[in-house]
Image (tube, rainbow, N blue to C red; front, top):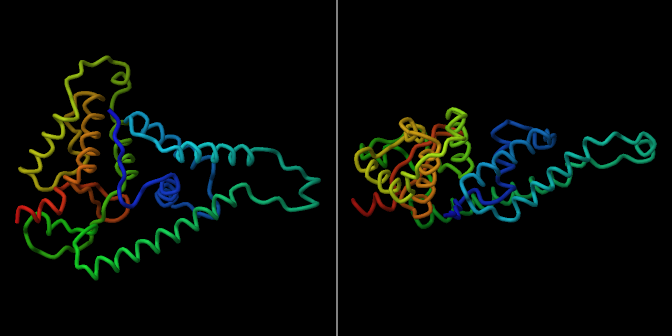
Length: 247
């Protein structure tokens, strides 16, 4: 079964590139194209492993990155270099990223204005507002992106012994069952740390199934995923709309 997962902030390949640039603290004007291409392809492979539907734009961007990488590996023609200064192969990509980044910032500003005017509690949440203590938060929590989740999932997979990837395991885990288990766990524990969900996983199949269940609950808007600051530890709670419905 494939899942079309689309969170509000991160949607396409440019979003993934901006995420990687920020995560690695890279100067956008001097992108180490070999490193970014390697990490971009790693994310795509994880998305394929999870049987997520990849939009064609992701594959087009992968080809673009490979083309830029190839151009940068070519030896410089000294004769041509003397006649004219050839444009950096990354220049067009940098222009696209900067333009898209400005667009996203403008869209975010407009969204904040809209939320302020309508007084709607949406994307920014605090742990206390969800666990019922009523105390103000010391620091804001922000919605985690799909790429944050995949990054955390990648770290979990790297802890699995390599032999697990070769074993044929009986299909004893289903997404539907894991969805039920997660919702039941959230009744007992209002806040769950992402990494804790995989501590007792028996094998790779259970890890993948649990992660797909998380994505399915996000798609159904049953849960919210959040983190304190960029790339912080991911926490899972019931979606604010469900919290309000019970209160």
